[in-house]
Amino acid sequence: MKNEHKVNRRQWDSQNIQALRYHLGLTQRELADTLGTRQQTISEWETGMYQPRGTSATLLSIIAEQAKFKYEATPPQKPPRKS
Image 1: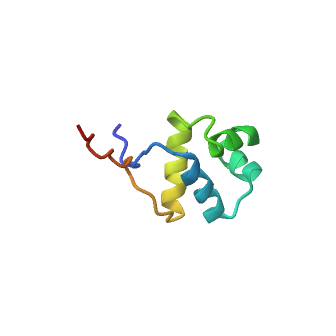
Image 2 (image 1 turned 30 degrees about the vertical axis):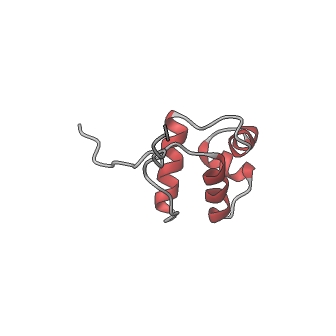
Image 3 (image 1 turned 90 degrees about the vertical axis):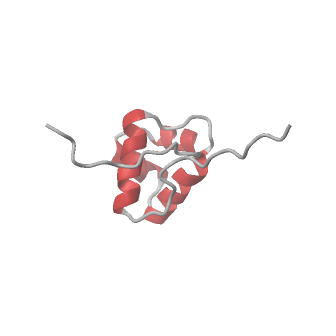
């Protein structure tokens, strides 16, 4: 059985997580309940202590797409190094 739903996963940084939460009009607790995690985890993501991985990152992407939250599907590329 093939998965017909493809979600553009990205590396979620603290700014985008907080921006998504504000876009949704949710508190940290409410977002945590939606994702099935702790409020402290959301706080740690928003302060940059940790980044969501795996299922959490996928769920954030799904929620963002359903909410029509504008974000880049892939992490921005770093500019080439100057020699």
